[in-house]
Image 1 (cartoon, rainbow, N blue to C red):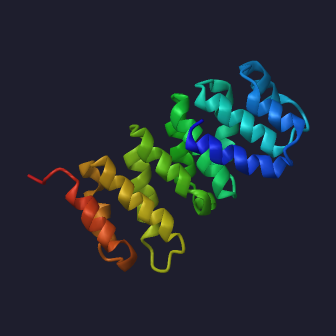
Image 2: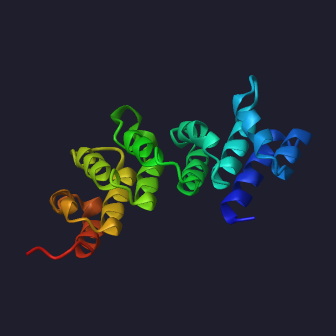
Length: 191
């Protein structure tokens, strides 16, 4: 059992009260049984999350919609678990969905995990979405510094020269300056 599954299982064991249903969903190897949890009416959130996570990490695309909803959840552990599963799912829609969530100004408070997922995916949508998100975070007194910092670090990790202008702007922000210096150092040299 990998560390992310162990953490999720422990969190959901507490949330579910360790019921027989919980134990069954942890133990089953039947992907159809897990998929049925996602479409059945009245299932608790913990059951849907566990089923979606297990399907996603198994590469079963039936989990995609549920995982995207969880990626945009207000509860950070749910977002982190969904990002982990989406990164392993291998669905071509994942980067587009993560980019949409990362750049949605109405949901910026929940953009941290979509930003990190975009860096992991290294998809064509990643750099433009991170640039857009970071540029919006550079306004004075923006309260989402963790999102901005994740964008700066992610752009450095992606190493795309298109990020140079926004990273140069980030140098003027004390909370981002050190990370921006490191990110700029990772970009290809200008000619």
